[in-house]
Length: 198
Image 1 (cartoon, rainbow, N blue to C red):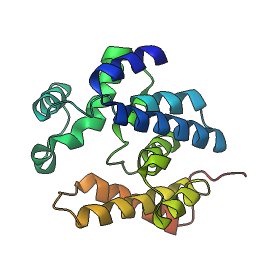
Image 2: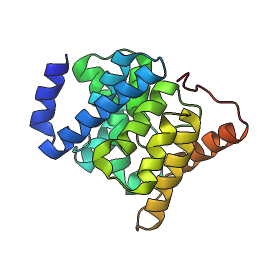
Image 3: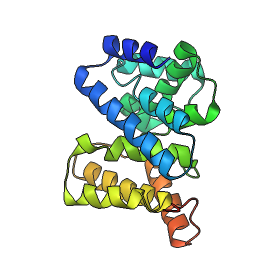
Image 4: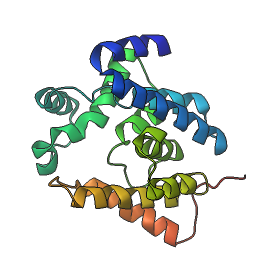
């Protein structure tokens, strides 16, 4: 199936984005191995996380509506935020992915979600922290944390993304804030969801 997905991506996504997708796939697999999670599921979610990245806004809104997804004011103003949820729809309908955990990891890779599974966390982190995203000291520190504690890494990565968005004229979706708050509280409560045994 991987070759089928790569062929589809080659027709629907620019080469630079495919390189990003392959780095997310790789990092997700490495993190899954590190945390004793299913490597194949991580690879599949990583490979398919951006299937709908270049869909036109109208197509994203239309597919989301047909699926019954919530289209709030922020999403209506920034339909691109739907690309994660719509990518999960494409994974299911075009490539026959039935595994709910994989579909959730694809759907949650941009905004996150309070209480998301370790697999979702891994794909969420890999998308933001894969090596092609840059090599600032802040990114290096975040990469280090993601090998130590997934919950803390999600919280701090949400902070990183929110800071970036606050410096741009972009809307911040309430779900991104809810994700940040949930993982912050979990981290502060010192009840790690899953920690490395390494």
